[in-house]
Length: 315
Image 1: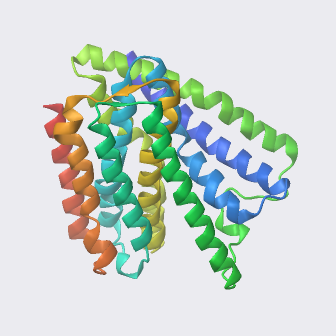
Image 2: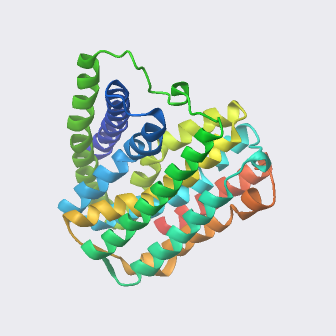
């Protein structure tokens, strides 16, 4: 029971520290004169993935690579089936009005490359560089698109960045940064260590714990964002949040984590979990390309599929 409580505590520390780091980094950048456009494309995107990144690094260092890879693959599957499914049960997502084709195709390409690299049997420093090179190209393309919109008069306002407060005093910025920088590694260590103990207690692998407990836990911020977007009828925010998060998970988290040690790929990933992740990603095709809304029926189907997936890997 103690392991479960400490795992929950580690997760709470991670989520709060990640939010603090984003707030501190965003406002420091704005105080130093960095344009809001660059802040939204880089700092916010990286900052919201900080909990997953620290878990991956901590798992590699603690010799629990199954948690690192399971967290990424499990989070991507949960992001589509659960993070889109549950909000759609509350309020239909009008995805027919979204323009996410380009980013969706990039996410699919990242998924295919990731799976191909996984079949090498281990993610090494070299494969990490390949993933990070792809991420750099994606960010450069996003920056170019954003600049084009800016020149066309579609300027990104500071209000679009939730954490932005250009007048925040430096002491508060420093406080948020310190909370994030101290809390993230602490929370990641507590969560990974106790998640490993849970795996040993119940006789399941680190991989299964990474795919379920850790993956769902680190998907909670995306779920909260998507629920609010659904209730506010902002389907573009909901879908864009999921697609962007999945792309960062594949390219940034595993890419950076390989700098701290190799990440061996459990054969179960190659047989089942990676294909479930890809299949879940392909399920977005009707919503992205054929102007289909994610209705309550679709929400039920997506959520039910996730529950079936979890039941299969736990048995």
